Image (cartoon, rainbow, N blue to C red; front, side, top):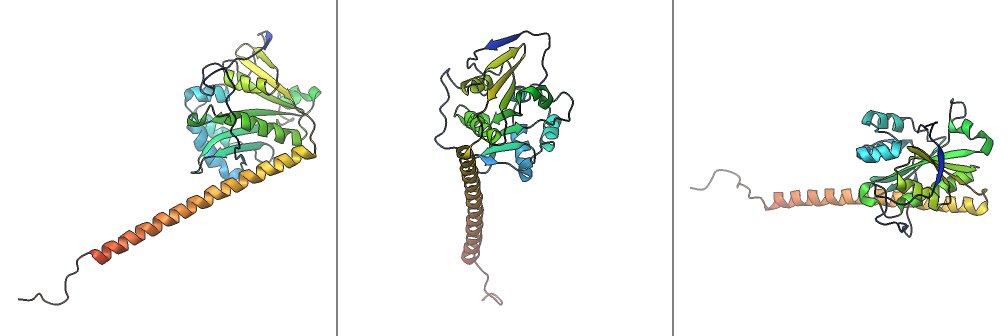
Length: 256
């Protein structure tokens, strides 16, 4: 997201205002007791595209910092580097992607990248998130932020950065609650969370969370397969019953 160089930097204490991602009140949205979060891979690219294309114009403005067209979103999804970055997702029972987070590690070779701008402060990663409207105000965004911070920490990242429009109060409040000071530069704001060093506990926590997310996804996938098989078997049984019950003409000529 571009910055306005002429705008004065201001430290802000964000409040939760109305918006597509904002909680219903100024109180923190309750985090779910346990949220299965899965690490996404190349074969999830189509599901990511479907999820992002479902965002309306307002949500796209807040997620990407501008009015992202379908073509822009398609290019973004196609350009996701699953080998370098971390992409996390939440699926519903129908295996629809209902939330995703992108933990991006900028390429130092790219001119003007965050990796160059933050070279003096150590390793850096950038966080972005989107949640389907029907599942907002449930703490899913906060859970994804927490998991992304854990993954970044275990990769040696020292600072987790959030770039957002200043009007995206929900995103800025999420970062602020996590302990990140927020700096406002006109229409744009930046939050920078300093992460603790990795340790054995953080790696174990990530491993358990990743395994739980994979098991949950596999369970939902198998449940859908069994459901399809059951529906197919029921359909075949109904067709067989109709054939048995259908009247048949007697062979030969009719009796006079």
